[in-house]
Length: 403
Image (tube, rainbow, N blue to C red; front, side):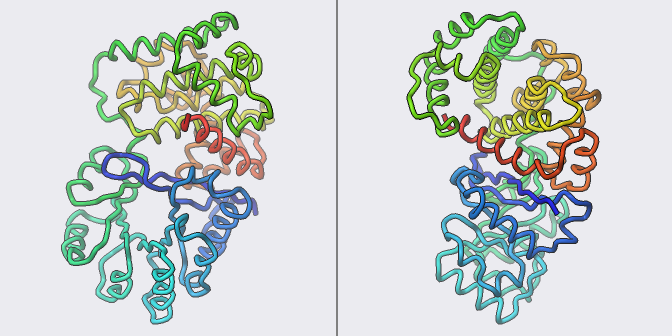
């Protein structure tokens, strides 16, 4: 059975990245149910630490990892660095004496313990007394029930995390209730859709994106655009000399840098930095997710037997979150950016030949393994390639957004 993992960001009150949860992604129908929690966590841990290296997946942030009762009893967590993982105890783990002893051992070793999908029950008190973080499913748990639980837990030194927060309204509601951490894709949706016009500064940046992506633009003009902006020049040279390219000799010329990565990659670079500036008032993770989507879509295109244009699909992924970045309707945005009709169709209506690629990426984000598998069949991409494509996209995005 082919497996892969994905990550979901966790934010603090200021919408800054706090950690990631590493999530099992099986690509068989009902794969998580078939595999079971023990195997799923084992895949996550071995893939993260032994195969890919945690830094490549986590961007040097702590990672929440699900632990079943069996894995707690086996002291599996103790094999991994206490400053790298947060032990997330699943909701069906019973507070037996053996489980409590295992949790106490982890606490003494310096591990952070989190309780997943929490529903208050007096029987859970032994675990509550050891917990550092308690997670509430903000979609499934009524607000009145959450309020009652928070009141009961007030005497304890516990930090609360709201998960499955999908809108800014839910984020604000959770913040008012007293939550400190927030998990979900609320940050990837527009805050205000009533805005009539884009700010002049953003129109200028969109104009730059439009000029850069004109088919007839020449390398000389690309060099001029980058060289005229100190920030662009600095970041391009940092990118080209980063570990992502594994170069032995340093490049210190803009024209040589463009020659090395190629004109298409240079266009992408300017486009991504322009988008990053447009989204400067948003969580940095939003830009990172857009770049992951872009590289993921491109990678799927390169592996697809249908042979679509990888460059166009890169732009589909990159622009898929532009509405959230600009808090503006998609029709207004894409009227100002020169992308193909197929790309516009995918971005505005999820239709056309590129739509299935974007839907594959979104299904992967949303833990919808069976749906993702169906889309992979539609776009004719071998499922065993998905893990490699995704991890490469993550590494690319983390390298680029850390410049």
